[in-house]
Length: 64
Image 1 (cartoon, helix red, strand yellow):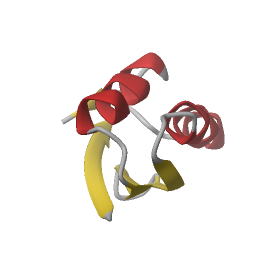
Image 2 (cartoon, helix red, strand yellow; image 1 turned 135 degrees about the vertical axis):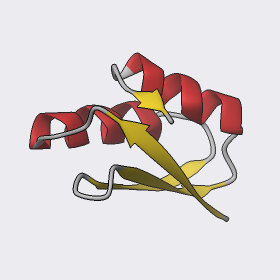
Image 3 (tube, helix red, strand yellow; image 1 turned 180 degrees about the vertical axis):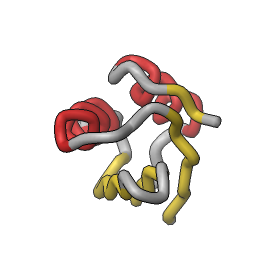
Image 4 (cartoon, one colour; image 1 turned 90 degrees about the vertical axis):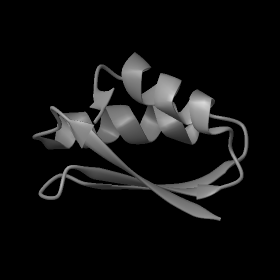
């Protein structure tokens, strides 16, 4: 299963790594792809949506 999130505030490689690290640690996530230009995060796996959103917030960003 794949879901995409619009995330505000990501602009550099540090942002990408922070989001990939936090979201990648969520149980059920099998893959994370950050597109800085589009401001999106694509998540593969069967992780709980709320946990993914919380992980993005923990990295310092907000789901739009």
